[in-house]
Length: 572
Ligand code: FAD
Image 1 (tube, protein in one colour):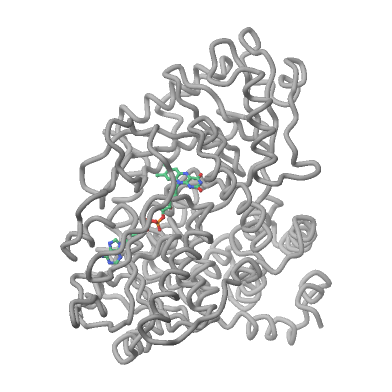
Image 2 (cartoon, rainbow, N blue to C red):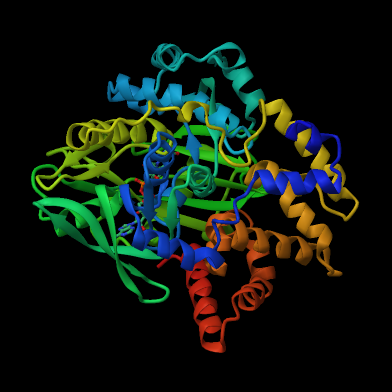
């Protein structure tokens, strides 16, 4: 029977087993770490990717699905760099029209629809309103033409096409807008996602093509033969073990750390990275009760987003030059007050204060430096650098364009490979590869599935918001989690659900500690911080039991989580 029918029409025990068999993802588990390490040591790969953000993940899936033997290593947790700190939009980048970056608008605009098709539960349509205000960046004429060009470049069709609203229509859509200075609005379609989950689902899909991938493993130096990079020496940062990974080609997809690896390769010459920091704050939805996403003017001439998500609204971002430690990027008081005053300025009925902030995140844009340009003027286009020793580095770009960035890298590797080793690989096919958990035809199927999940969990007192959380996070894999939920003997239903989620994160998604779980497997630290406070000790004890941690290890992970909670909630 079709998997889809099985799930929507109620699932027999055999059906559930079939689903679990189909999603044979438990190779992607901490428990399998030794086996993965053995494979990494003994195989000569075609492509070794350094960096487990969205760029590295996209390359891994593309290369593996074209038949390359692929390895990927990540020094921290997957998506722990910029790929869990973005605005979490799969979008066409309207602002790039202002920079006349038509090519970028066309590429990311077209990509939105493809990525939505590959994971409709995770890349969710989101209407955006762009208020036109006195003295704002976009006048009515420019917005109308701009959004029209945007629609054409991105091949936007049907209901998603832009509409221009007059003042009354704009206020009806978003009553919080500033009536006295409002002249109307542009109304158009974008997509919202969870960047870390997207990265993890892309990685899990690469697993289906036998890519070998591991987190907490850092590249420390390169291995050379005949003046070519043919692998890397790496260190497992959990066990401390050092070993070598051999590969015909090596890609440096280290985002903000790209130049560090180029430095190790003695190839940091010519173009270099220019890092800018972007911060987002999260408040309860009732504190900023926008009805849909708003893309609005800030008095200093920049633009910001306010995006509703479940019980919260988040807003951002800043764009400031950054030269400090890349491993601990913090939201400071200046960032927080800038964002709060921008929101209070745009929405006159709102009066948010620092005390209202539930959570925050700060990330680094790995942009390419251009002499004389300010942070927000720098292009978001990706660039590839190939060193004399054939280390291939990629930087810049967008979450949205990950598939096309991967295509450019794998095409390049494929050509080089053919010339040197006389072997060809297939054409790109990632536009047809559904991401794990994403087996839905379209958004209305996601909705029916969410209805079915809601019915199922309503019996044990969960709500629509809980069903949406599960489906947006895990897609059809929600069934695996609910199967586990049914099997667990535990009285407290909330804890029982968390238990099932932790079990899934450990067994299917290579989570190794509570911080991985709360930040990158579930996004709870950002979007449901209350649940982190409520369940942090419970989750810690689940991990302790799962991995038989001693007291010291348990304390270290407790401290680590405490550190990240503090980073997200205090501003110095
Ligand atoms: P990263 O995610 O940083 O991944 C690089 C990885 O390499 C890291 O995980 C790091 O730990 C690892 N690494 C580093 N050194 C080593 C080593 N020696 N060995 C092993 N691993 C190593 N794009 C959009 O499309 N939509 C948006 O809404 C959007 N909003 C944004 C908002 C902000 C504030 C920012 C900062 C960016 C935003 N972007 C957005 C851009 C997008 O987030 C980035 O382009 C993308 O996430 C970069 O991914 P990456 O994989 O290149 O880098």
